[in-house]
Amino acid sequence: MSISPRAALARFAFSCALTLSMTVPVLAEEPGLPTTPEAVRDAAPEADWAPIAAEDLLVMTLAPADDGAQRRVIIQLLPDPVSAGWVSNIRLLANAQWWDGTSVYRVVDNWVAQWGDGDETKPLPGGIKTIPESAYTVPQADQAMPEPCSADGSDANNLCDTYAPRGFFRQGWPMASDGEREWPVHCYASVGVARDLSPNTGSGSELYAVIGQAPRQLDRNIAVVGRVIDGIEHLTTLPRGEGPAGVYADTNRRTPIQSVRLASSLPAAEQPLFEYLRSDSDSFARYLYLRANRQDSFYQQPAGGVDLCNVGVPVREAG
Amino acid sequence: MSISPRAALARFAFSCALTLSMTVPVLAEEPGLPTTPEAVRDAAPEADWAPIAAEDLLVMTLAPADDGAQRRVIIQLLPDPVSAGWVSNIRLLANAQWWDGTSVYRVVDNWVAQWGDGDETKPLPGGIKTIPESAYTVPQADQAMPEPCSADGSDANNLCDTYAPRGFFRQGWPMASDGEREWPVHCYASVGVARDLSPNTGSGSELYAVIGQAPRQLDRNIAVVGRVIDGIEHLTTLPRGEGPAGVYADTNRRTPIQSVRLASSLPAAEQPLFEYLRSDSDSFARYLYLRANRQDSFYQQPAGGVDLCNVGVPVREAG
Image (cartoon, rainbow over all chains, first blue to last red; front, side):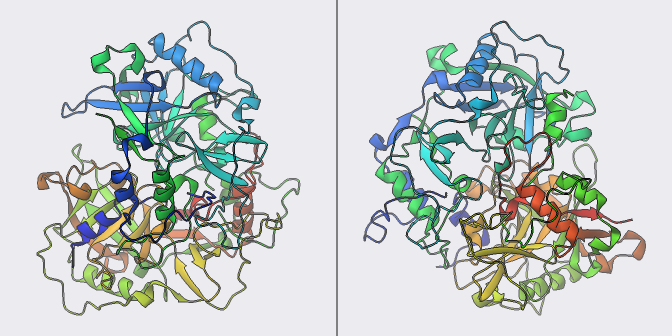
């Protein structure tokens, strides 16, 4: 069967690529199983999906687009204990409606879109905590950890991470570890906390979303607090800043933020419902295996590996 | 000294990250040397910069933006022998002015922007060659090759590539190798050739630019022919497609292409002049080392490694 170039590209329109050590191949060649990551995702039983708590969802509403289209960005916050101090500040800022009337004031191609108080004159609400640099990492949680990278081919998914001894997933989040401490990693759509020079770690009032190649060099140098799970195109398509560091020199080019709310503070009927594919599920294990070892007809040369930030944990709107 | 969050982010606004084995550290700690990759780039002597031949530059002019702004995208084509067959087709298509009046008809967030004949009705000019899949790779050129990934810390830049035994740079291009064959890799801004299912390899008339996380799983499965070196924001900020596979269901949303020309076919005064930092220069070796081992005051925790697609070979407009 021949398909159009567009359809052909569709074959991998959502193919992504993780570096994770597994004890699988999970039924890699068993006849009758889905052979694409997308098919595995679509066939995953309800039990393999986990709901995202409304307390962990930020709803950022930007001013409507020039054509009047609504622009809603949904951000999932990291679970405790990862980046807990900054996430606590962010919940406080959202509950104080602090971001209302601020803006997206900086956009750098293949880097970040950044928002908050572009004028740096708005007082922060009381109760904002100062978080120490030590909080960039947390003690390795007690679980079976993947082994460090081995080049002997024993790892079906190839755990050769350039930036850390080990990469893995927990609760649907890509994480890295040195065997004693673990930390969240910067991937496309990750949300982080802008800061001054060390020892300043940022309050959480100035946030950025990654809109390009995973800037893993920022891991352990700046706080990752979450990820955009819906509406990232409202950030990635914004005009790039023409001023120093990609800040809009013309403040009229900023994108106004109408509101930022915790989903849990919205009326029940307005609360967005999202869920992610459990990273400890068999479905995820097979999804991951197929990301690293493509079996569909488009790929003649499976990579035999996948980067931590190129897996793309499946997240979907629920119900 | 404390700087604003924006200025702080500016500190790494262009920091990128590579997986490449080097026999350096190159003067890693020598006093008086620049300590940031950007400073190394800016201090590189003229001899470390190489001009890009006009025959290797495609100038794609899109219809002006809604505000009347001009939109010019500059694409550098790969040098022989890499992807030579497809590049030959692309030069033929440009000389035939085949793309004039076509469009950017597909944009998928964190994936690709694709252009050509969205209707798939426009006849190709005579002379278009059919390229075999064997051309996705070429024999390893005779040069000292980096060693495969070793986890013993002997590599100052950490060559642990998830997708290939070895990563390296040649003539300013990120490449991968298995020790016998080598191939170009898919990074942010890479330009590739859309195709039907195997054994079809695409003519080169339908092209895409990567606008997200490096889709390395495509390496050796689809032809990389070049990279966008200027004006990529004219592609990355386009509205995402709402149809199947991110194609614009409403053809009025396509972005018209006014013309695509080889720079060498333009009047001398109109030919863009670009140059890249020679990847065999001392400046590049130090630039690379600092990408992997940040020494400036923003980074408290250098990664000790950098991904092949996160280095960002310096390219600049000349003169």
